[in-house]
Amino acid sequence: MENYETHTHDVLIIGAGGAGLRAAIESSAQGASTGLVCKSLLGKAHTVMAEGGMAAALANVDPKDDWKTHFKDTIYGGKMLNNWKMPFNHANEAPERVRELEHWGAVFDRTPKGKINQRAFGGHTWKRLAHVGDRTGLEMIRTLQDKGIHTGIDVYMECTITHLIKDGDKIAGAFGYWRESGKFVLFKAKSIILATGGVGKAYKVTSNSWEYTGDGQSMAYDIGAELIDMEFIQFHPTGMVWPPSIRGVLVTEAVRGEGGLLRNSEGERFMEKYDPERMELSTRDVVARSIYTEVKEGRGTPHGGAYLYISHKGADYIKKKLPSMYHQFMEFADVDITKDPMEVYPTTHYIMGGIRVDGDTCATTIPGLYAAGEVSGGMHGANRLGGNSLSDLLVFGKRSGEAAAAYANSVSTNLNIQAEQVEAYANEILAPFSSTDGENPYSIHQDLQDVMGDYVGVFRNKENLEKGIAEVDKLKDRAKNMKIEGSRMYNPGWHLCRDLKSMLMVSEAIAKCALQREESRGAHSRVDFEGYDDEKWGKVNSSINLQGDSMNVTTTPLPEMPDELKSLFTEGS
Image (cartoon, rainbow, N blue to C red; front, side):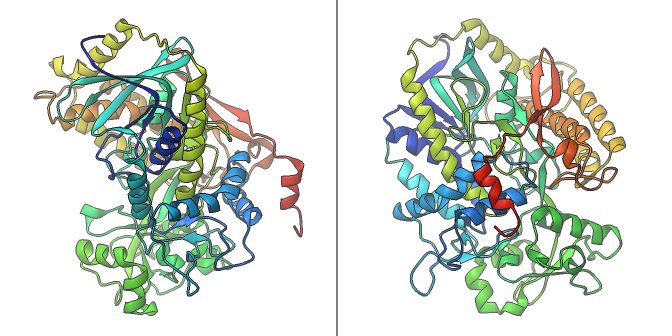
């Protein structure tokens, strides 16, 4: 053990996006020694990609808005598959968390009366998204970072955590390496919060950046935690399609929230066919499938997408409300969106499933292990409403930090980590250096992305899912023997070897859960099982855990909603 750099904390938080930072602030405020580990640089979190706003029933623009409507919208958006307690806590607490962020220095756009301004988004009854132009996630990270670094948090940047460590049945620490030097580092902690985000890099066309490789889901699964609803992958309706180098880069829903119109190559405003009431502000699953269908049926743009118009709003309005989008298209695609339409197509964006957590404390099924944000499951059900992710990070970041600090205060300081176990982890990570005839990890990753795009994409069927699972199994075998060149310093090929282990695990989980769920619900679309099957699938979550060396796929009952909340969904409520 003395061979490894070692750090000891009451609470260790893995992931420094919105959830991780908010958890660290709360944990530190509770008096716990807090460590914050990030795979990249502080401030590089994927939270900055959430541009359009954070949903909270502030009622600043639409006075009729309240937590009940927000709760109902979230449950309806999730196609009734949410863990009711999470949307309940979220809808009740999001306004306070947003006002708290403002108190800490966030500079929101304002109404004429000086209140936080709010815009419309798909699936929300009222204008509910507090925003900072189309750079809301960036402002959120800036504010949390400024607050966090003054609260006594130890930050470990460019550090990849590869394994969680247990003492008996409870959490005891984490093991990983510094990305710059390749040297190993050991963290001892009484409790750990996973805030590592999503899985998007398992797909080729994605809005997600390189960090999103399913690390948290995979590490929790490896030590026995339960995952739920992994089949529900949100394909954001609007990603850039041209030029190819930026395919998948996000085009914020704020474009449609500010009045953007979708048209096909024939000039038709095609959302009239798919959701005539909500049109472009339908839920993301509906809009994504609609664009996919228009292109597949031959009404796509020259580069295989749909046209998104905002030019009718005027140049000054666009540059004020959507400055990032204006610059993004000018710089990347040489398109002036004040004059010409954007070309958009669905892009892998978000996973609704993840680690099963308690709806109040964010505790996983492993004592001492917590999860918040996209890495966890239950909050969003079968489909996430735009804007709910940022306020989700604030609400459950705070709750997880509070609970993890309380747990750390209640357990013994004698954490027992076996030296042999740590040595085995080190040898596993170093294995690609000693291989003489192994595979190139980049080839395996490219093949995995092709498999997921071809067989586990927007539309699915039994035949393709079975092919996808078989192909993932082959890739897992290939990944058992990977070879890389060079040293441990600045070696992205070596980093990818570890990331592949995570991506293969989550890809298998996504495909197997998708095969199991024989219905179409939310972001999961089976062409061989169209429509809901409420009797069989409407009240169960998909469930994944590790049994021996195999992935066990089953279902578990959905938590029962109390009668007083059920009454909100009755006619005329």
